Image 1 (cartoon, helix red, strand yellow):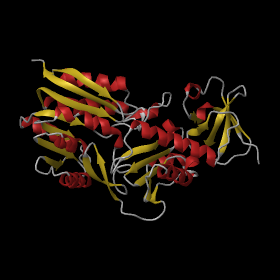
Image 2 (cartoon, rainbow, N blue to C red):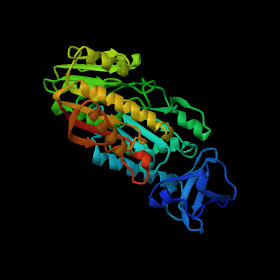
Image 3 (spheres, rainbow, N blue to C red):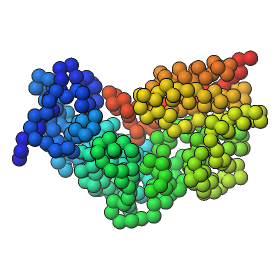
Image 4 (cartoon, rainbow, N blue to C red):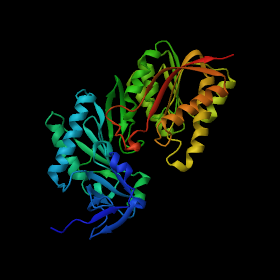
Amino acid sequence: MAEMACVRLKKGEGRTLKKGGLWVYDNEIAEIAGEYENGGLVKVLDFDGWEMGTGFINTKSKLTVRMLSRKKDAVIDEAFFRERVREAWEYRKKVVDVTGEGASCRVIFGEADFLPGIVIDRFGDCLVVQSLALGIDRYKELIVKLLTECMAEDGIVIRGVYERSDAKVRENEGMERVKGFLGPEFDTKVPIVENGVKYMVDVADGQKTGFFLDQKYNRLAIHRLCPGARVLDCFTHTGSFALNAGIAGAKEVIGVDASELGIAQAEENAGLNGLSDRVTFRCADVFDLLPKLEEEKELFDLVILDPPAFTKSRNSVKNAIKGYREINLRGMKLVKDGGFLATCSCSHFMTPELFTETIGQAAANVHKRLRQVEYRTQAPDHPILWAADESYYLKFYIFQVYNTR
């Protein structure tokens, strides 16, 4: 067996790696010694030759090495991946419900499960795979096989697997964007149940892997605010927050999204839950609609703001701040005095401190006082790995909103 190539770091670099992170960037590397191919395995050495572990390399990407193991002379084989997959599945069994009818969860969350570059979501009896790195792409079918075997031991039979490796970030790895069946074809409209709400998830054409599982317990957190309430759900996507409000007893819910496909799916989901009389949807740009609702003097007991990421890079953070400030101040103006605002950001570049500061600025601009009810992050099936900043991305606040004059 050929000796593995070695990536040697510059002196003073690898600080994130030493704290527990899994990434090595191109500007941290002093030299690469030995033969390798992109996507293959390499050893990573500190500047003084100390072995730091094994990862896979891709010199086409600024994120050049993603670590698989921090152990010296680690063997990366089927047994290695079986152990990683089993650990991920056993963790989910402890932190979320994996047994209920139509259960769904994120089963593998990339770096946070020490399997960098791959995400696998479970929707009922189907899996959706998203492979984002060249090295892990070589192992994706093995990982899926091992995962289905682990789940089968608990009586969960997976009938189909769909790949949604169509994210633009794959281009940074020199990879094509792909989607399609991994194995036999199946009906890609998949029923799930979450918080007592029924959904039909479109794993082939829905956003990302088909449904945003990370907000599961944040959606549950609004239930106690909803009985008898009038609710506005902005950026509703396929209606998840709106439907949670409806099933929790809201008297009227309006969900808004700019996507016609999203609104059509939301209306279908409302029908599945017998909520079409109380939960309705509008296809509109939220930034355009909220000022109109203000002019019409509309007020709500609860306003929910769940926008897409306004920034996916550090270069656009300033513009994102403007967007979050604008949407929050508009939302606050539509909350009844003493009513509630649920607001969130799903960009890890919008740090908790920056998001908090932006909300505070919005409140000051519209003369509102905020009383924090609670602060939450993503559901525990999306664990946050310290030193891997990208794994901590979702910030979710509930506030009570008061007028100051």
